[in-house]
Image (cartoon, rainbow, N blue to C red; front, side, top):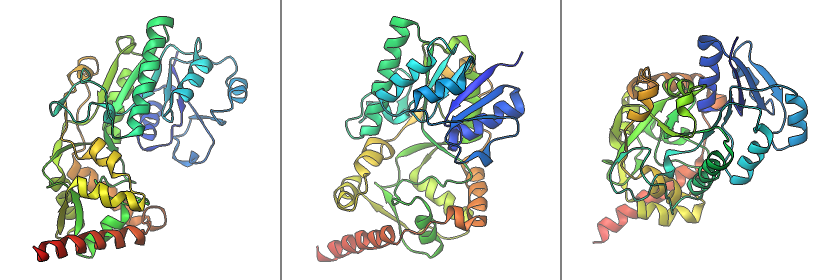
Amino acid sequence: MKKRALFIGGTGTISTAIVKRLAEELDWEVYVLNRGIRTKVLPEGVKLIKADINDEADVLAKIGDLTFDSVCEFIGFTVSQIERDVRLFKGKTKQYIFTSSASAYHKPSAGYVITEGTALSNPYWQYSRDKIACEEYLMKQYREEGFPVTIVRPSHTYDERNIPLGVHGKKGFWQVIKRMQEGKPVIIQGDGSSLWTLTWNSDFAVGYTGLMGNRHAIGEAFQITGDETLTWDQIYSTIADALDVKLNAYHVSTDFLRAVGDKYGYDFTGSLLGDKSVSVVFDNTKLKRIVPEMCTKIRFDTGVKIALEYVLAHPDECQIEDPEFDEWCDKVIDTLEKAKQSM
C-alpha cells in the first residue's frame, strides 16, 4: 500500500521538487492543499484539495476521513497558524513536518559551523523569531501531547526560477542580473568574503523525502542544506561567468546598507545582519545518519546555468524590472565614491 502525504502549499521553490520526487520516483500518494493558483507545476497523479488552509471547517470537510503518513507544512509562519494545523491534523497524521529556517540559529553566531544543537536566537529578524516560536510550540506539543512533529531547517534553497543574491530590491533578482549584463557595479554586502551555503531544490528534496515516514525523525530537528560552501564574491563571480560578463563588484558594509536601505523599505537588518552577512557552514551529519543518500548533486556553477537559461528564456515570468532599486544602487555607490574623494 502506498504511503500518503499531504502538502500545505506544495507549489513553492522547495515543495515543488519534493512533490515531484514523491510522485514520480518514490511512488507515494500525494495530496496538495492550496488555493489552486500554480497547479500547472504539479506532476500527473497529484491530487489537489482546493481550499484556504485558514478556513478550518472547509478543510475538514474536504479532507473527510483521509489520514496521512506525513503532513508537510510549507506556508506556516506564526504560532497561530501552527496551532490551527495541530487542531486540524492531530489524530489524522503519523507525522507533521514543519518547515522552519536556518536563519533561526543564533545571531551573531559563536562559531561558523552550525549543527542542530546551535542555539536558536535572532534579534534582527522577526521572520526568524516567529519560526523559533513555532518550533517551541510544536516541541511542547510533542513532549506533552505526543504530537508527531519533525522540524526541518532549510537555508538558501533555489531552483530554475531564482538566482541567489545577497542584496536585491523588492521585485527580486532580475535588476541585479541586468546590472551585470550592462557592466554596471553590483552591490555585495561586506567585503564579499563571508561564507554561504546554497542548495538546489532537487538536492534538498532527497534529504526531505528521506525524513518522511521515518520514525527516527519524530521529535527531532534537521537542517537540510547542500555540502558546497562559497564566499559571496564567489557566488556573484559564478553568476557573472554563467552570463559571460565581467563582474564589477562594489562592496558595501552591512551597517551602511541597513542605514540607507531602511528609508526605502529594504529590510537589510533582517535579511543581511539576521542572515546573509553571517558566515555559516552547515554540518549535516545528523541528517546523513538517517538519510545516507543525501548529497550535493547540483553544484552552484551547474545550478546557476540551469536557472539563467530558464530566466533568459522566460522574460515575462522572470525578468521583472525594478528601476527604483536600480536608482538606489546608483545613489549608494555615488554617495560612497564622493565620500572617498572628499577625504
